[in-house]
Length: 104
Image (cartoon, rainbow, N blue to C red; front, side, top):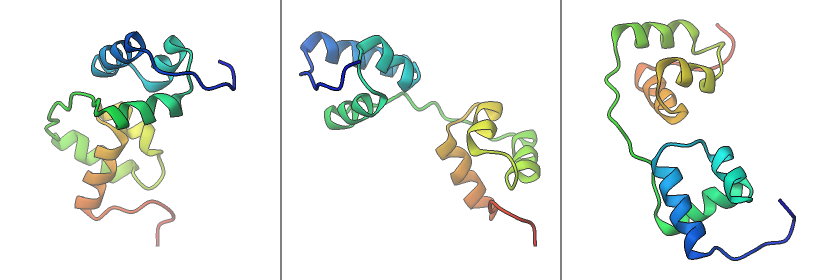
């Protein structure tokens, strides 16, 4: 990837949409398109491309893990372990009244 900006072609846009909706991680999409991850995110946002959002049903085990590990584990690690997005982990933690950081 060079520092020079280049225009998005119709083929680039179609590939972005296909890969984004297939759930490929943004860095992988960026690599395939020869762009930065930031450029991929901006383009997706500007053109209304979104990832499918399957509904996750939080299990008792998911909630237990979140309660036990939220303070100390990274949100990304918890999200991967539970199978949700980091945003979903943060939202569920907020609903449960959980906070990051040191224990009182």
